Length: 333
Image (tube, rainbow, N blue to C red; front, side):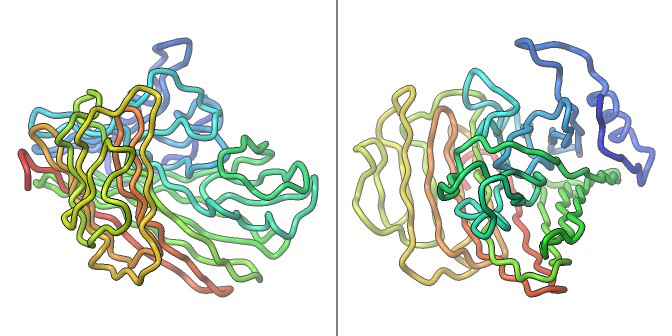
């Protein structure tokens, strides 16, 4: 196995669980078990995938490889998890849980490079632009250099760090910390991005937050309660109803179908970055500390989410930070 560097900042039971999981040789569906870590307290058990260029759960060119929360077990329920049957680790979109992406519309260096030139996806590495076509987020671009990761552990946290040495004017130091509350049904993800290059960074970040309830298909009555008032047409494909309180599924989502609605054209505040997703017997509340540029609703397969898209502008030497808090509760909260 081609593991990233792991530094144990505490020889805890949780740490050894992580090593045992990462060393597993079980084969499922023709794929070796992906390395993972486990964060655990009396109220919550969180499975987190570790980035690995050889056997990581996700090795595609689009999403940040680090710290995808695969599943959360709490109150007799399992949140997140698989939302479709088959997976290809190298495909663009075979991700789960808290899958985040930088530069969905244009990654670092893409617009200025020509065919055969380099561009960079934060959280992935160096890729090649194949032709003069505009960037497409769902195209399977070739990764020529996946950047290495450092993984640091404590009893209740795990931090992923990646560095792009200054290349063609682009450079960054990126870290993502997942910290579990010692005795609550919650965890927080903290992000830090420093521009170490000579060119300004102007990019976006969002997290899919693929919420799945107990591995079951989305049921009518599943609701997304938003802090902002959604606008636009009152329904999405007559499957979801949009009201001042948010979005509710009124019909089952047909297999192979998806729902999408972008909410923009307004000024969002940090207070708008607060969403509760209510499923059968349990609720997930996701609260960010940064004002979004836009909010996107998405549902596909078994998963449903709101995606707050934030804008990140960093001059050389500047640092940006943001965070998202995930809280879980029984029933509708």
